[in-house]
Image (cartoon, rainbow, N blue to C red):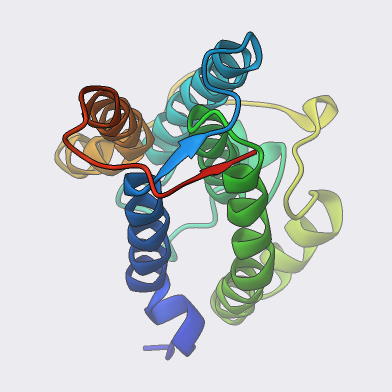
Length: 202
């Protein structure tokens, strides 16, 4: 069994801690754009990105449920780029940031993602290269690492899915939507004075 690096092994924990800190920050802040036209515009952008991200993550989960590492998946979303799940996660994170009706949060999320996830991606691809060898090298040369390209998209007429694993992973594919609900709850708490706003952010 191939060992994993620290960044890859602790990906979920580190992401949770980073996300928890940002959510905690929203508890004590308010958007400087509140009561302006910019606020609903930013929230709408956030909702669109979260919607795309959630559908994209479900799409990716459909293809890799039960096959991660054991099979080199190169069809569907994985024909457009090598890491579509992380791409859609990035969109979802930025979307959640915009849903706070600020520019600060999407900026922080983008910086955090850019600093941490490239190491995770390199680690996972190194392991896949050791497992699949030349097949992965060919796939790597032909397919972009992160940003999708539609010109290479292809999918099979039929695809075998393991329903039990797919059903379990759907919950994690939708967590950006849960966060939107939490943000709306926090905003309601601010409006009725249950939670004080210590400072505002642009």
